[in-house]
Length: 424
Ligand code: UDX
Ligand code: UDX
Image 1 (cartoon, rainbow, N blue to C red):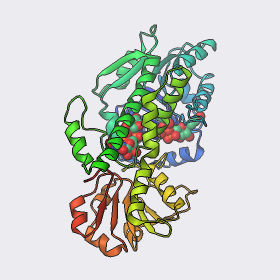
Image 2: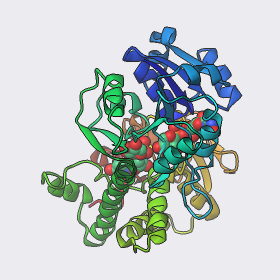
Image 3: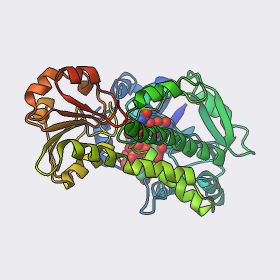
Image 4: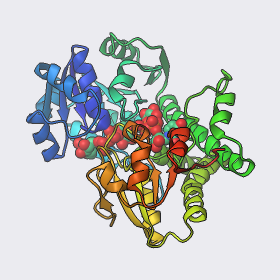
């Protein structure tokens, strides 16, 4: 098939590479000229494992354009993968989606299929279908939300747990178009209405975020009892009804999806006059989780002002350079606001310009002379540190495990003081 992808971000680029590997010819279109120029030079503008190789291996079927008029006209399927960032109230801003539709309308024709991959508020795809129809364009509209995780986007795209397809009742063609498009990917299809698919996306992210806030709340409780939350997560996770995934307590969830999607669903519930008690609680726990770690550090170090603190990790999670809504950045800002002398490190991510904290080039540079060290993003590099060496380089001996991912015994055997929330 001939495929067009509007929006060459994390989701757009991953979708493009996967479809090219499946044999389709893919044209990426993005309004960001620098991004397109980089792609045309063969440079992938984001760090995502395996993505660059896929682009190289399938470059004969992968193209990038700033102005994609011709390719939109010739496409069998057009994907929308533009951003839907939150507006001031936390409602999803669909202006990029609307702008993409504005750009498309003059060029699309009745035989084409328009596929929404961006996370959009409930009812958006029905509105788009009506708008196209009012413009005399009987284009089939499909809602096909993605569930890929950054850092494992390529793997997740080739091994999805399910493929969700939202269709209009009167659409008897698009399901087979999507099955042909994804031929080669083996996963159950969930076929529902356009709004049903939109709701599945939000509910999935909200549930995962709620699981994280639940275990973080348990970690706080465990902390007061001297119980190990890792044991608790293991003990409840073996119950097939609960499952072991997304029960890793720590400084909270971040990224371009969970924070904005939970807030968006809360706003949608208010509009629908439904009180979202659970979602409010999920957000409230996540908004206050970092404070528990800062309080622990104050109890350990006393006043933080003037203390040299090494923060290992800037990205919102390992294996990505993405810092959007990163809990690590929030922590760095909070410690800085307490007057601490903070130095940060990350293997791939870079501190935002507005964060007035030094970023070390090496782990050693960050750790040297530190009074305390906190791991805020659980990169493997930090889990495999030589703790005797760390002890020698630090001034203090406090090691705070912000992601419950460090080897506690090895740290204590090295004479360091291991600190966690909900860790016995
Ligand atoms: C996006 C959405 O943010 C997310 O809600 C959804 O689930 C999947 O798609 P992501 O791929 O991470 O996620 O977005 P981002 O990395 O911001 O990429 C969006 C791209 O669209 C950017 O490259 C931007 O330049 C481009 N864009 C945006 C356009 O080309 N045209 C527009 O009108 C707006
Ligand atoms: C998420 C969803 O997993 C994915 O299906 C959806 O398409 C997009 O949003 P992503 O944002 O890339 O993917 O990251 P994810 O791996 O889900 O982690 C999100 C945040 O939760 C990170 O900050 C991570 O550190 C945190 N997290 C995750 C925990 O704190 N504990 C856990 O057990 C799991």
